[in-house]
Length: 261
Image 1 (cartoon, rainbow, N blue to C red):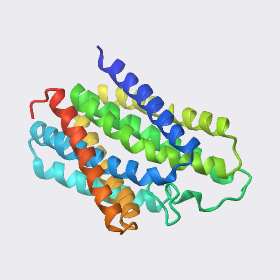
Image 2: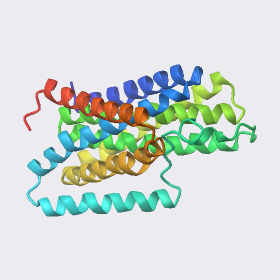
Image 3: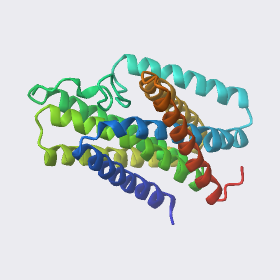
């Protein structure tokens, strides 16, 4: 199957899976499940980065120091972007147990928060599309693993976004439609990434390094802090178990795809 077909299939299927799973949770407003999903997402992201992306990068690039430096400065860059409110992730659970800490305001704000979420989520999904395209252009198996990790972290994010839309006065059907529509931004990002990187293949490892930095940043700076606020022993044990399950899942995918790292 052509690489472009793999990329489009991964983005479309990933978007559908994440939105459908998120809606199943959010329609029942089972916010207690969100920390479980977030823990699993942490493991999936870390597993994809450390078991596949980084080994691939260090095998394919001669200057390991430059690659490591690019990842380091990529993490710093994502920190700055988030400070500038251009990179909006709201995963995790707030003190009230709601997804992403978003759902603390149960008043109708005339949809302002909801529309901000739709715009932010579209930008985030667009970026995910570029990440998926760069991974598939480097190696199809690497693309599959990366797409799987992105779907895992999209689910808790979509739950949080869905709850914000409901709290902003949107109906359940409209909130679901907007979430699905914003997921299509990943296809646009994937197409742009594919055609841009296909004509500049030397940039693929660099974009992949920045992608690894972004995934690390999301896991460590966005997702883990929300889990740290839950300090009871039973909750901590559950978090560790599902982080380990996320890592194990990505390791299983890695082995099943027969990557030769």
